[in-house]
Length: 260
Image 1 (spheres, rainbow, N blue to C red):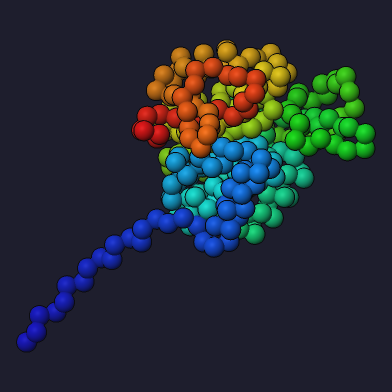
Image 2 (image 1 turned 90 degrees about the horizontal axis):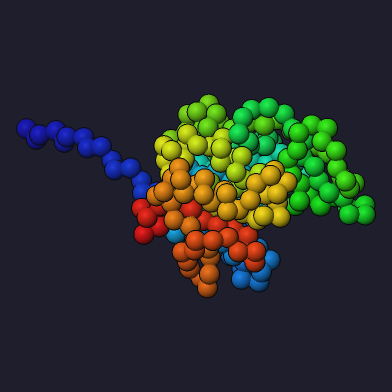
């Protein structure tokens, strides 16, 4: 009598990058970066983000980071794209569907230090709103120039991650026209827990809207999370730096574990 075969559990499929649609989207943004049509830091994301990671794109804009990140995390990862402007929301929703983003949510909300309400103030040049310069203000804040206003709810990263029961957050991109320190304030619990890599726009010309400056913001990060090292993308590599320079927009904060 032959002995019955003992069933064995199949090994989980290895985590992989995204499918062909997201691969094409990723390649297009890489090409745009080489032509200076997209931010060059996109080329360095693959060193920070891996298949299966959970990532958050705050200030998703027109999907410049959502599309490449969708490819890098693959079908087993999750990306939440967040932008309070209706125009950006609809563009990113279209792009997520186009590239086949597997998991995660798209939210039309602003992130800040505590829940509430605000207005996105978009400068107007002639007949055209400058959506890329839209920034958060308290409701009814006067402006010295013609603007387009959009009401928005405000949430916090910590509250969102808790409500969604998200696991470890590997990477957060924040580009919110000077509101970055206040987004970080509302993400302290997640940063304390996970030490995600943080890619942020840091420019004094935007920070001054909120009575902040780059030097003070860097000091806050260093004091609370001394494990972070700061980098910029220079000549095809993440390069250590200790100061914010006017000609550079984006700065990466990563631990030695994340970026050896």
